Image 1 (tube, rainbow, N blue to C red):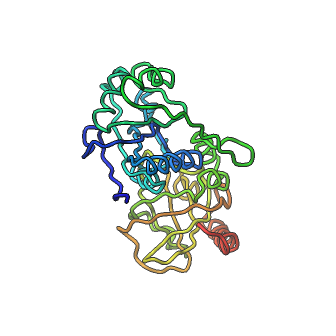
Image 2: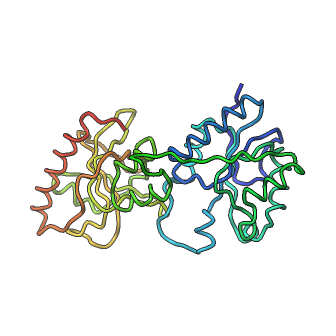
Image 3: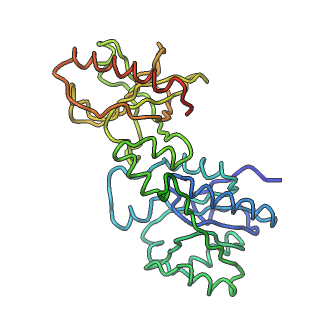
Length: 313
């Protein structure tokens, strides 16, 4: 019988050492390709009486090595962990990627894995870790017999519309606002969440009050525009007309996520809203004034009602 999943933020914090199958990778997005591999590994581990685990890194190695700033991640770390455990993974280790780890030799890191996990199998495709990425599949296959683990090379070659599903494809889709393709690659609706904070309250003055979400500053946002999305308040699902962008008609500087919740009249300040994006309605644009903006929002809301009426998040 499986135990509740465990999440630790360092390999040294793993609470117990037991035979473990582990998948190594960034797993940002936990898309259909990731899901296929993780479910296979989870089933194989369970059949062998072993624990299934994922070791991923935070921050993303590319972010640390390249010193990149700005929005990059498809999910928050918390959401990534939830999505991984939803695939049947029993242990998630979000190990910190820092300068010490960057210069750690691959053989030394393997020793740490074996010591903490009693590692019996490594599952992965394009594995390369350790100093100068020396810990690749060939390296691990040579080291495995000595250390008591086997390599299970896998390929996450899942396709949608005859094109490979990848985290890069999901990021590209978000960047251009192709939510339909993003959702197809994820096998679910793209979600983001944030605490509702006080905005300029301009929407209320024109009859369309919005919930202004404080979203994690490193989370990749969909392209600027208006989207049909769902949110849940007190267990009830609501359609929303959600604007992502700088609001060029009234602001033009700060990028925000604002959701007009249809058929809801209440105070949301301080609450956390989760938005499930379904479809992009239009790109963001500048209007001549508030009257023209108000008329466009009215059309946006009508389109959201039509497009989302029979959709499922």
